[in-house]
Length: 252
Image (tube, rainbow, N blue to C red):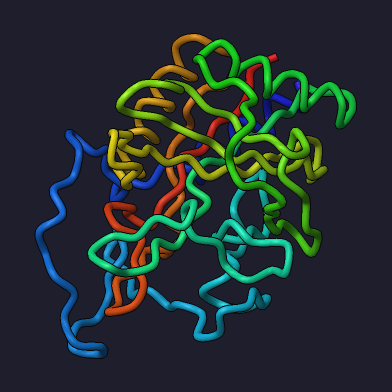
C-alpha cells in the first residue's frame, strides 16, 4: 500500500497540460533572429532561463528542482568533461544541436539497482530499442548531486538501424531516490541517406516511445514535466524540443 500511496501522489504532480505531443515531423524553415530580440517561452508559458556557461553547474538552466518522485534533475545530456553535449555532432541551420534529457523512467518496485536496470532495458527491448555500437559514448547525466554514466557502458540504444530513419536513446542511471530508482534518457531521431546523416526530430520519436512503452511494457506514461530546456539562439538550438520530458512510472 505504501508504494501505491507514493504513486498516487506522483500522478497529481506530473501531468502538465502545456507540453503537447508533436503531430508530425518538423519543417526547418525559421531562421534564428538576432540574439536578445525575443524572449524564450517554455511549453507552459514560463520564461526559459538558460545557463550561460558551456560547462554544467548546479544552477537554473542546468538543473530543474523538485520533480515529484525524481528530485533535482539535470536537464542536459553531458560529456565526460561535463560540458553540455550535442546530438552526435549534427547541426540544424548551421547551429549546434544541444541534447536535452527528454525521458524520465521511475521504478518503485525494483529491489536493487541491478533489477531496476534489467526492468528498464527489458522494457526498451520490447519496443525495439536495443544496445548498439557505432555511436559516440562516454556521456553522463545529473540527478540529486550525483552524476551517472550512460548504460550499458560503451553502447547506446537504437532502433531502425540500416533504415532511412534511425532512433537512438542514451540511458543514464539508476539513481536511488526515495523508494524508487530513477533513470534519465535523451532520445532523438536521425535521417540517414547516401549523403550522410541529418537531424530529424526530438518530439515525434519521444511521443512514439511514450505510446509504445505505455501500451507494451510495465512503464506507464504519467505525464510531462516542463524543464524549461528549449534553446533557440544564433549559435545553438534544441530544434523542435518543447522543453519538456515525458515521465513513466512502472507498475509492479
